[in-house]
Amino acid sequence: MKRVYLDHIAGTPLLPEALEAMLPFFKERFGNPQSLHEAGQIALGAVEEARDSVARLVNASAAEIVFTASGSEANTLAVKGLALAGRNKGTHLVLSAIEHNSVLNAARSLEKMGFAVTLVPVDKTGTVDPGDVAKALTKETILVSVMLANAEVGTIEPVAEIARIAKARGVTVHTDAVAAAGQIPIDVKALGVDALSLAGDQFYGPKGGAALFLKKGARVLPLIEGGVQEGGRRGGTENVPAIVGLGKAAEIAAVRLAGRAEKARLLRDRLIAEMLRKIGHVVLTGHPLNRLPHQASFCVEFVEGEAMLLSLDMKGVAASSGSACTSKTLKASHVLLAMGLDHALAQGSLVFSLLESAASEDIEYLLDVFPPIIDRLRKMSPLYTDYLKENQK
Amino acid sequence: MIYSDKVMEHFSNPRNVGVIPDADGVGQVGNPVCGDMMSFYIKVQDGRLADIKFQTFGCGAAIAVSSMVSEMAKGKTLEEAEAITNDKVAEELGGLPKNKLHCSNLGADALHKAIEDYRKKSRAGAGAEEAAAPAGPHADHDEECSCPYCDGPLDGMEEICSCRHCDIDFVECPECGKYTNRAEKNCVACGAAIAK
Image (tube, one colour):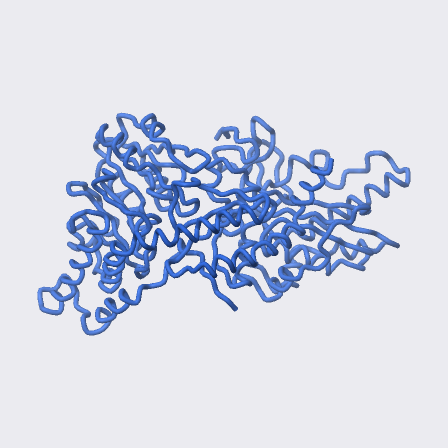
């Protein structure tokens, strides 16, 4: 059976170059970067080289990169670490309503410790209005966190403008760039942010290799205590192979990013256009233009996301969904609900995201197998029957 | 795969999908808030379920459950069909993932509602008392006392009540009067703020 992987946002395959670079650090180059001897110094050299590569991808300096084990850890370190370190200045946080759960739940933990949190709404395209962030700021605000792009709906947020507003009020700014890094150019200086999270498994690096950019002078309380690693900001022996793999993936992303995006955009645009043309009662979610180049997301009326995912999987197509049934907690995506979609429509959520290896045959294959799936599920759907009845009247 | 082969088989080839326009009884459970909705249609002949059709909006489990219930009940007497429980359906399907047990496993409830609807109609048809005796303690306000997630019965009819299946406490929305998850800040039905 043909296999078409359209779930980039869940994770990407490892670049052969990254694997190659990592392998020696599982074997003969096993040293601990904190050791003084030669074995340690070889590992340290590799970690610092990777730090340089990651810094270059976002136009930072190497000393501003803290390695973490995941994007979620980077987000948690930013939100909790920055808030707790700045606690004497104030105890109010401003986040967008569509942040990743690692940001939202970190803020909820802080609420229990006495912090106050304001969630800024988004419009129906999933875009934050910088004016709303300005209105949410108080004398107590110490941190603003708005993501650079949302994986589920693809929308790119006006982070530079938000940062300008917040910085003018002396407020620290973090952006979760896990979905954006490696897909669109990122320059932390142009964005004007103090902290930015990224993860290698979103741009063909290994799982377990992620990083937080922390602008020089930005103070965080570490989540993991215990050592001098990462400048005291993250304890624990460095995961050298993952860091090396992340570095290699960042180095390659910096070179290939523009080409990858251009190729993905062409295929993605065809996918969106044909999807809307071939299947009735489908809406594109997220911003129509200002969105990640490799991402296409929809809500299909009268059908439920998990049933679509299972049906696609039986045809060899991998995708994802924000429907309640798909989530372990059985709750519909907070992102779609924040955009004002009703529960029934949010249940029909479907997200496609393209790997750099995606070919036009893959998109054609999807466009072939998908309409019959929707036909079949709609014939089973009481909501569709109700709709047809209403329209007969 | 998160589902058993049997579930996937029923999901791929569901039995008895459709609508019976002149059904003797119709039963509906579920709500798009949790993601699953089932409609069951029955034809009754000589006290037996001569035909069953269903439509389901929902996940793989919900579709497979509906199909399995229809197969288990077809040709059975009303009493036999009423003895089918959600647990038995899940068992016949070779089990369901834990988090799907209460939310998607509502097929037997939908069928029982269809049978109840049939009994109500036939009583009315036979010239019995207009308002048939309520079947349960909350039958006089059954629109309001069901769980918005699984449509199961709620325990306690004071200001706060709870769903045994979902293990969620509910409060009455001050605006629309529907029951909504106490943990939510806003009513899931109308969006009004929920007083804590």
